[in-house]
Length: 355
Image 1 (spheres, one colour):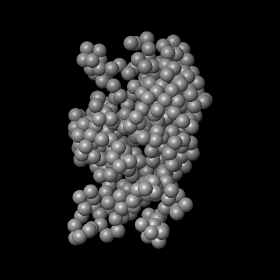
Image 2: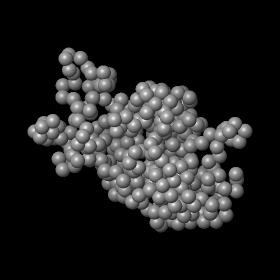
Image 3: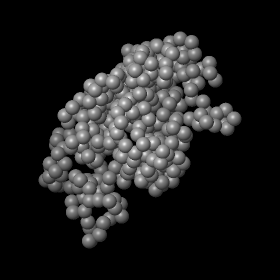
Image 4: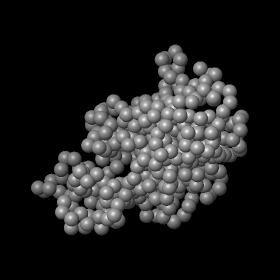
């Protein structure tokens, strides 16, 4: 694409020209965009069938991030939905597992697999928050992009995010493009290959707090204007709390950060006492969040440390995947199959005396 056509496309998309380097210069514009949405009087096979799409895109979110193969990175694109069993699901899990059960993941509308059981998010603070079969990948009823219930419907909610995208340490998160995985307002450290390869020292890092948000206060989730719904704590658990408020709020776990709890705590420092002292090496079976956003992934876990990037904070993703998993309730391990069925007890990564 010559310089003039490139500038025209940037203007159409509303992307500042100075940030265009966020897209790999080796990737052709036509991999994502089209001008007339047809060629030789027909739609090309790789284009979505529900278009045309806003911003001259050739497909929607799932259309771009899905594959009929078992590969989870295709042409540099992370795949979150495989129609064949994925060989190496990425950090968020894979919507393929919704074929097992609705209880194995989030039933986003774009997958075309409606939830037959739930009518609202479990632990929802507000009735009618996201109703049955209304959850989407992005936008007002979704997770990625801006959720401001005015202009942000569907793809427009992540306008400019891919072109502006930065990765690695994201410790500002004041826009969608500089937020962790385009989760508006969430801080974190993005692994460069979405954990296609992973180990104790090769993984995402999540931001956590020492006290959960108080979701009974509107300001915990509502910032107003174009900023939209976003967690005031800027943590991954706080983000989950914008839908699952009772599960991830200070009031929902019992009113304070000291045991006994009425629900499993999140955004609480892993104690440096008793059985918890044994968790000193990062374990992907039950990852922890950090009280400071790291500059790189670390295999060090320090129970009781609530201030530095090697500290350990319990989060919702310590037990669950974000998209879908092979296991009941989007768990990271086969708790129902443990011990007789050969499953795993990921609880004992933290609760070591319970093994």
